[in-house]
Amino acid sequence: WRYQDNEDTGNVNSMTSYHHFNGFFFDDTIHYYCSKTSYSGSGSWPRGNYCIMRYGSYCPSGFSSGSIYWDDEDSYNMNGKGGYVPSGTYGSNTRINYCCRSDGSAYSYISLPTTDPFYLMRYTSSICQRVSGMSVREEIITTDDEDTSNNNSVSGSHPKVTGTRNHSLYYCYYS
Image (cartoon, rainbow, N blue to C red):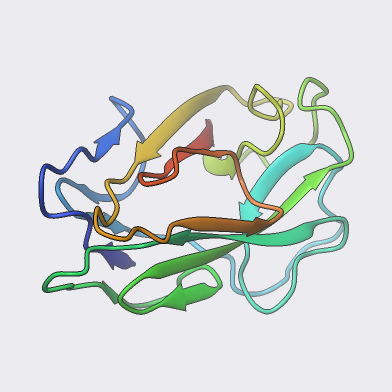
């Protein structure tokens, strides 16, 4: 899990109604992550246009690496973390590393396991990647980040994000 201490003054955090995230989303946010921490199975990730959260030091074959940096609340910052979290830096601010690919069309169906719901993230396409046998719903999280001397940034290959002082991320929920 990751507790992010978002802006204290005039907070405008928002989230898609009826979302499927596990966590608490009020003036601050707590995200719980379900991470695959070891390799099991066969095959590789299919071509397409999507991002995943990076776990470990490297992206799987076919992906490029990048990150998103949140400038979290400066005053009385209460950020915290525990358990398994995506690769990144988790101090008084937050940087999460991602793996993205754009070697296929989001409009073309790809094959992924369909036994459990999961999230991918939008990359450069205007839609979520289509996945065979799954329904998809876009869910957006907007965090109100530090107001004073905000240093939010992105680097490399990262999921679709809008806003500069406040980040909005575009998740794709498959069920």
